[in-house]
Length: 222
Length: 90
Image (cartoon, rainbow over all chains, first blue to last red; front, side, top):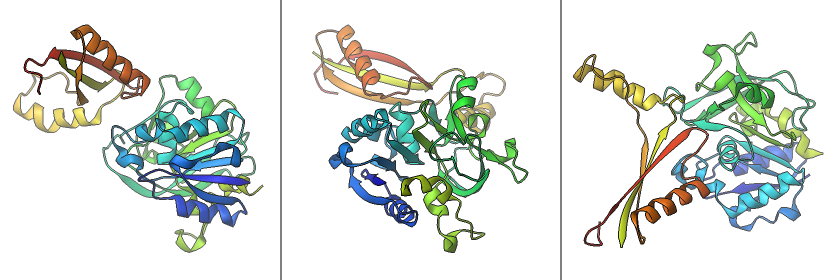
């Protein structure tokens, strides 16, 4: 799949994402935020980092950019849109995904490997995924919030879970509503998550040799 | 006329504010024990602008904040207050 990986000023994970996408056979390339031509691509990934220095709120300024108009166009056409970490923050700030990502409840930047349960397999990203994935998080603003728990439960694709696979309070790294780690839109073609699949795609840099990030990225190789 | 407009952005009442909670617990309560019910921490954006009246200055900045999402209506509430800058400078 021809996939654009958008780089805003302050985006840091674009090369890791391109490298991981190439593992699954995607035709991925980095596209600068002011030169995205939505018609050239079948899919788009918004990688992690600190777009525009996280000024105002993480993702808020990027959400106002021209590039996001192109991403919205792609989303409306049913193309695949994936936001990772800061990319997830940009997707909620731009309204492509419901809810908000607030500063972590302990007000700390949290960086560690977590387990997430895949709650929905009816999205293009998770159709062939394992039930529980092991991936790292690294963020200061990842506390998912929505004022309607019913909708949040329906849209939630990933939940932070403990070693028994339960979404316990101890497994919640940031105070997210219902341990939510990632959500989709109503149509299922837009996905955002706080964990970094691209950092869990190479056995050499994973604590146990797993490559669970590829479970989510595989769809871009089709 | 120049107006100084303050956009005050606070978490909504139902949304936890860990910064305010920490400030209350570790700083405020030890200084004013038993007196303070709640502390909230927010963000302020100050816009100094040309407008024909205070109402217009408040209206334009509120619209700016809503259209360009200077606050996030899902989690924040917004207060807008404007005052005239007498000598035209801040």
